[in-house]
Structures are given as C-alpha cells and as structure tokens.
Length: 342
Picture (cartoon, one colour):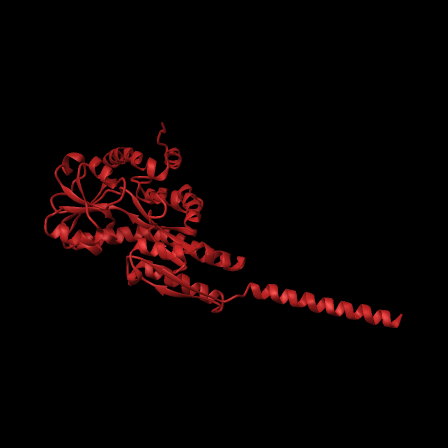
C-alpha cells in the first residue's frame, strides 16, 4: 500500500512538472521578441508622418519593455509604389503610405472625387467602422497586408497662377498638372480645366516653365511644400480627401502573438484618432501659411452652391472607376452617400 502511494505520488509529481513546463512554454510564446521595420513615404522629418511612425515605434517598445522594437525608415527607401511592394513581400514589415493600385486596381478608389466634402463626413466614412475603412480592411488581405487604420492626409485643392478659378467658366483654358491616375482627368475637365498628365517629380519645372498654369492633386500642406513660390492662388476645392493606410505584412502579422496584435492595433488606432483631428488642423495651418506667404486662398466651402455643383458634376466621373474598382463596390459607395445607382 505504501509503495502504491509512492508510485501515485511520483506520477502526480511528473504530471505537475509536465503541466508546469507546458504553462511556461505557453507563457513564453506570448513573450517572443520581434525586430520589425516600419517606414513611411514622401515626407521626411520634420513631418506629421515621421512623427507618427516614431510614436508607434516608441510606444510599442515601451509597452513591451523592449521586447518588440522597430527600425524606422523614411522616404529614402523609395516612392509609395516601391514601399507597397516591400511590405507585400515582407522586406518592410509595416508602413504608413498611400495604397498602390499596382497589385489591385480597386485602390484607385482612394482618388475618387467628392466621396466626402468635410471633415465631419471624413471621420464617419474613413474612421474605424466607417464603410470605406471596412472596405479597405477587406481589400488589404488580397495583397498580403493587414489593415490597421486610415490616415487622413487632407483635402485637396488646385494651385494656380492665372486667376482663382472656382467655376467651369472661370477655369476655361487654364492648364493644370493632373496626376496620372484614373478619374483625375475626367473630373478636372468637369471643373473646366485643361488637364495635363505630369508626374509629381516634374511639377515645379512644369509650372515654372509655363507648361501648365498650376497643379491639382495636393492639399494645403503639399502646395506649401511644393509650389508656394510658383503659384499666386490656392483654391481649396475639397475635390477629394487623400487617404493613406497603416498596414502590416500579413505573414508578419500572423506570427505575432494575439496579445501583441491587440497592442499594436490599439496603438495605431490611437494614431488614427489623433490624425482625424490633426489633419483638419494641419489643413487650416497651411492655408494660413499660404496666405502669409502671399498667395490668395479661396475655400469653395464659403460658396456652398459652387461646392455642391462641383461635387455633383465630378461624381459623374465615378463611372470611370466602375471597371477598375468594380461596379458592385462603386455602387456600395453610391448607396452610402446617397447617389442613385442604375
């Protein structure tokens, strides 16, 4: 009987040791070290973009006691198309960048004109749980990325040399640089301008040599950075809201422990919320800087009739995106914003 009790005790001891070992292994699985690479494109320091990815890197490191760290890169890695490719392959783990349509033409929708016309609408549509944010989340999976949130870069406008055109009649004969992206050419014509497809890198030369009279496709910050010495007017058309994405390579995301995924998502979501407020403030700050620099600034929202006319006219160009994005997706957008579908 005594030997039997000793045997039972030994079995229990071994079992407890095995269970304890398993528990330690499970715990350790939640404490794996990760050395990640994060980058943003286009704007070097000092910029809100570099500040944001540095905050993410610092906060993740802090809350994991240095277990997860990030190597931070800026636009020195390449343009946004190249950065998208790097994250798709896993050469860079995480990015803050515009989304490239190279892998999936549906991302052309980020340049659809007048999905929204003000920041209140933008927060509802592109913020967490908004229909565009949910759409982006579903598409990101198809390009081997996990969608973490939408960065609102800001509303766009048109900088000009000749006059502050705010209607098709006033814009007639004015040549503006247009990004080589689907739908832009269509809706710039709707606004009355003569569009000229020119790469972003050639914008200053094109304006200074008179090839074009101004440029479209950028907001107050971009116009101040690029063209404040080249143009005399900035018309804040609010023709589209430029959005970027916080994304992470899907394979890397799946290697993270669930608790680490939750932590990174929480920290990025805080950045998303911060930017929702910061983008509007930044637009107003740079509109003021443009004025202080000597440009005449005209905000189309000050003439609501002109803004609504521009909106309704330019939305007709969504048909240009039906084939690229998919009519079912564009019809979903139409339905959400109250545009009739055929």
